[in-house]
Length: 148
Image (cartoon, rainbow, N blue to C red; front, side, top):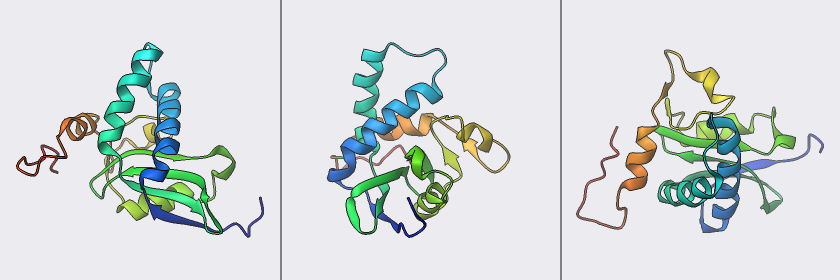
């Protein structure tokens, strides 16, 4: 991998969902839970929740948009999860994705890296994830409980 690799952030779409869900589930399981939950239940149930909050950006190779490098799921208010493939870490990709979201100051999932962010600047609030995931996005009559 040379320095000539160009990466861009594109809005998350259906074509990215299996990449996002798969990596989110794997990374979250081994980074965020102590003790580890029962795996069958975790994969089945957390996937349902993730699907309700999908949105954000995916980092792709500028010359091959089918090469997914990483993703940030969330909004300008909250970061649900951020991931970059190990080989592409320390290149500023996570920062680019985070800034593309709008630099949210609240995050909903703990990882080895995000634990370092809990201070006076960042807030850890997992309940925002559950509130947004439980909201019926299909209903036009209901106001989202996820307001910040």
